[in-house]
Length: 396
Ligand code: SF4
Image 1 (cartoon, rainbow, N blue to C red):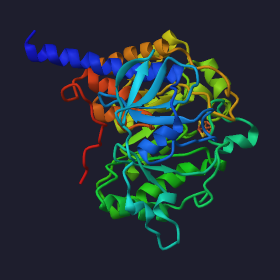
Image 2 (image 1 turned 135 degrees about the vertical axis):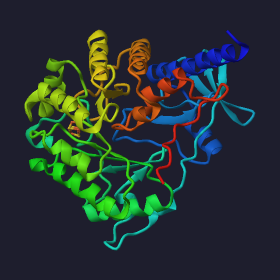
Image 3 (image 1 turned 180 degrees about the horizontal axis):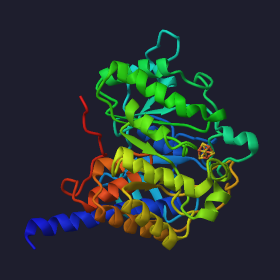
């Protein structure tokens, strides 16, 4: 092996170890003095009492891997300030210096549309350069008590300035503003179920309204499997390049238990899988996605699911199960960091074997970076011993 490949292999291990560290931090939490960090960062440690059980802190580890870790009083991990710099310790031993990311400011989000609604009430821009639209402000599955057990969509505090349902014209106008500012290299629309599945037609109206202004477009519609599969082709014709049906759990029986509303609608688990497979015929390999809550399924069946989906050209995405406040899973525990690492490591090996691309790993339902950055590290998409945040390539 040449010296260059030896260095690359060594750096690959350094970066993968840093990803593993995020899982350990996720399991154990980190101790810090919020007041001292506030003075250092010039901003508060953000508390989000409606989503998480505990305060959490976002930071970037020494080799560029970012993470969000909850506060814990008793944990082997702590952050201290040394010489004016934040340093992570493990069992009192330094791991390395941390960085705090200052979120990029996007003045375009403050623009007010003719209807009086601010752009930021209609969409957001994520650090990968993707525009996200959350179409509805709540999920209609709650009407029958059929919410997915892990999901906090219906128990979060609402932003009163956000319209409960957004119109196609408004979204296209807001998209046009951020696209002309050089963003929106990818578009994602998702949201809960809307009564009578009205979201299915609305998402098509939205992409048509956008494409009246921009013929070049890249975007994913995250929808529940439609009862009538013929609508899938209409999504492609209207302009979506990608589609996602989020199964959340792979095991058929667990799907009925964890996602009772999804399982009772549209023919259940088998129909959802059939719709994913049918979508590949229309959108192509790597353009069909499904999201999972990593850690709810048992390990081997879950990996069998990843193998099955990958073999059909479907990109499976997952993150780490974190029990949310106010949901039936509040107070439950996620599996160990070792468990999460094993599924992450083996799942990405499978996805590399089936020849997906880095971009396909990010074009899906939203948790792309969890698997995407491991995929990038394993395929050598980094410089030296650092990895930058993934950015969607420009479509203009
Ligand atoms: S369908 Fe989506 S929004 Fe509705 S409860 Fe399930 S995960 Fe949450």
